[in-house]
Length: 386
Image 1 (cartoon, rainbow, N blue to C red):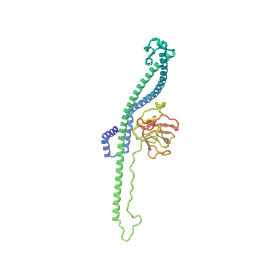
Image 2 (cartoon, rainbow, N blue to C red):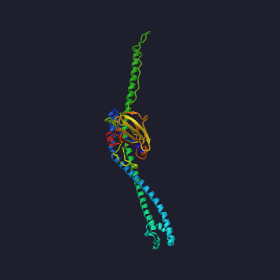
Image 3 (cartoon, rainbow, N blue to C red):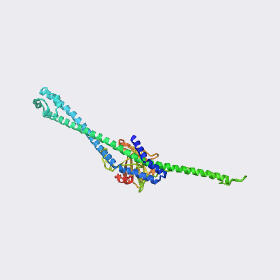
Image 4 (tube, helix red, strand yellow):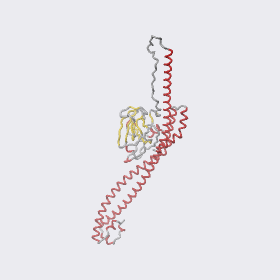
């Protein structure tokens, strides 16, 4: 959090004078569009870091799968070792009785049959099955030691990957917050400017109404005993209009970027995911709470919550295509299933709910043409967001 605050302060210190200079004239929707273009350009600047992050995610998934397999293997090996040790105890007990005092512990601690520091007569006394039992025990102990060594290596690799992910995530979020702060500063200045203009216009209208009322009273005074005709009341009613909203996000061919804020992502279609799954969407990294909007006119077909996708939205577009938004931090106020929404309408916020709770905040976004199977959404998302 301290990093984010420092980044925003740095932005205001750097770009503040430029915005102040602009405000001496007038901030226009074109200025906001330029700020949005700069915000979008952050995705290009962050492409390399995002690619490193996605590669680290894939390494982490692969290591996690290897750890799962190895954990099962170790469990099986331990169970077999337990059974073999029980058999070995029977063998050594019989050898003690038959060969006269052989050290049972020396057998169980041996690395191989040849390491047994006992007279050859004792070994001769072992049956073939007994020797096989002890040989299997030693071999399995070696295998178990190797497995434990592999486990230690994998755990160290996963720890290093986790540290790398945390470092990359911190850098990504800091720079995304900076890009958003620049844009938000321009929008805030525009809204304040338009609000000041509105208030000034209302005040001018009020003063003009008062002036006219005063003039009418002194110049059109009705003679004594007469009555003003209907409509002769000179009072004026003024209305108050709401402050202007910032321009909606830019669109392309009736569609707009589903993330209305600084965002970065790479093509991870088909990348491995936990549990042997493959990635069926694109992970659009953005600061937590970044607005999510309807990609096109359509209907909110379904909102739901699950352990996998977390808070999700299915949007059926006017084109007939379906769009899946997952891992939301929350829904926009009043959004519910069956709502008709226009392109660019706020529907939710970026988060990392569901099975993404330990990852960087992002929108998992899918495209299902005609409501069918998912297709790679990267080309569409890139054309709308970059």
